[in-house]
Length: 117
Image (cartoon, helix red, strand yellow):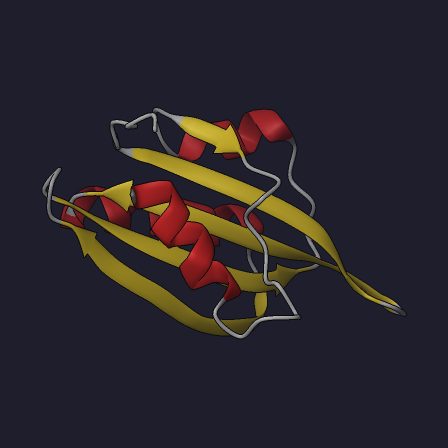
């Protein structure tokens, strides 16, 4: 099994919000210390404002690295260019595996467990 070193980063994904809905559904995973995570979240929200249909954040700690993680999920009518999104943090990655899985209520939690273990 390959061990990954978890570093400060932002991962994101987006997809069409649904049939007949022009909004994009956005997913962001922020891994950083408290101040860095709050700073990245503010940049994301200002970049994609106005935010609609925000879902509760999933938050936790990654104690081995002394970092915390936060998953943001929301809809926005604004579509941003990739270069603008890359400006919210030093390390930004597009991750197509970051999304809600409808077949399992714990889908994002499983994704996080696989990422951090």
